[in-house]
Length: 426
Image (cartoon, rainbow, N blue to C red; front, side):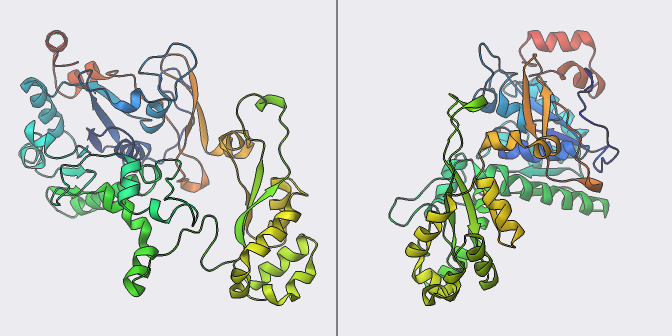
């Protein structure tokens, strides 16, 4: 890895080379979208300020011992490949510099609530005056035209309001929140990037300025499609099913041999219970499962003859299967079932992923942090020509302020020093 370029590996696949993004986004969903644009070759300039530090620089995980805002694991993961400038937008001079940067940018991205950018005179109507073919991406929590346009929130709130929690969990329990901020890492940034790529194509066809709004609430609610369709068609809400399926059976996670509470994971809080997820979709897969578990006679049991019959006797069936699966480790059981044509996989935790040599080599990148720490960053699941994309580390806070001000805005070193002393670049 180069000490200057921080490139993990070389690649010539840079379809957005020459595209510049002025990035006002913060937290996770917005920065992940602009990170993907950087992965595709765009120059992404992240606007930061000590007056309003991106919370993801402080939320963790952090290295052991003393740490700084440049060493936060989450920030370094979601902001790979970007540049960072310090710009205090509460100063009129800072707002003017931002407009000058927008004038030399193809895309402006933001995810503020309400009219914050408009109050700084950096809204769409202001910036198209300096860049007539600007693509402006706005990712508010709620649509700017709706009744909740001034509401804020993070992924946990959005999951709840969008109905995700209502279908998660078990039937006798309250609604169950997802572990990760799922839409922040999936639908929201990818919907935003898809819209931006379409806008770039549209611009090349002669379109002028384009304003694109991706409401994170609406993006998240799109995940609930089948549930919305069911309620529209029948007026009934689906029950919370835990790990079960309304169509397939057996469909659950089953206990396997416990992992040893010794070795490198001892005392680290790593769980020793192990599980295997099994999803039988056809009677052929059901028959194969019976053979692998050593009970071919289950195929002829009228309680289990069809998927509908199996669902009616699901409690009994799950107990029978669970009594057999503990004979194997989760990995061995999954391998046996996959070889027999039955969809199955071990229930992994983060340590399992990082211990997988192929997965670690192909998807995770070990980077030297900007101040000496090392961390693993997830790569993009997009593999041009079957090869993983290169990764560049995230920036130090304000690392590229002088470079951007001098090379893009034409400021002299004395002008930059004056703006730093005045707090505009800070």
